Length: 241
Ligand code: ADP
Ligand code: MG
Figure 1 (cartoon, rainbow, N blue to C red):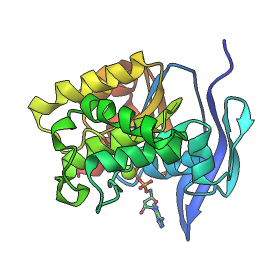
Figure 2 (cartoon, helix red, strand yellow):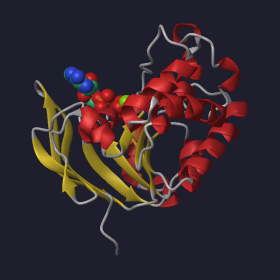
Figure 3 (spheres, protein in one colour):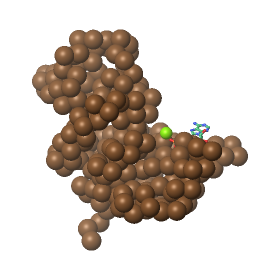
Figure 4 (cartoon, rainbow, N blue to C red):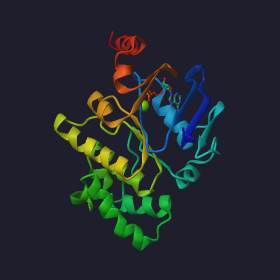
């Protein structure tokens, strides 16, 4: 098997007395789409933050394309090809949708202003936001901001994309469109890790799923395998009662 594009080994992260991520290890192959599931508070966003450099682990390593990137600053991790979206979007609120993408292409990808300006509308179009290009981010609805967030991440031209609940809050009618967008991202050759609660999205958009509960990996396998796993069912039942 080819060397993995991403390797997380024995990762631990705690906040005070709470262990958010415990002894987490997994690999991602180039071109793979990996799903990350688990009840609220399982540690999914923390794990993405550890990969993207927002948080430094207490112990453990992250390797990207064979290089140890543990503890590297987020902007450096972005420059070497890992981009992410946030569960709570973080746009520049006083800039338009278009300006947000231009900035991401300039600073995240190192494009000149002219190239960034020619690239940005294509990215907005990819997430169906071209008609909102001149709207200030502060005036966009929060689910629209999720799409802007995705375009911002794509503007940095990532090899690996970390997607934190991009389909959250979408209506049934909007789901096929996000699935198409994810499919296009795959066709662009981008590897991704998708954190998602919307099961219809998860089942169609990933090759493999890791399930976390209370910071620990409790299951790993094909979407069908993990859905039938007792530990997974119990973790989710535990949440609803
Ligand atoms: P998930 O994304 O799976 O819902 P998170 O990774 O956001 O879970 O959170 C895992 C646990 O870590 C939760 O109990 C959360 O309250 C805690 N946590 C996450 N980030 C912080 C932080 N910056 N400071 C303190 N606690 C945090
Ligand atoms: Mg989260």
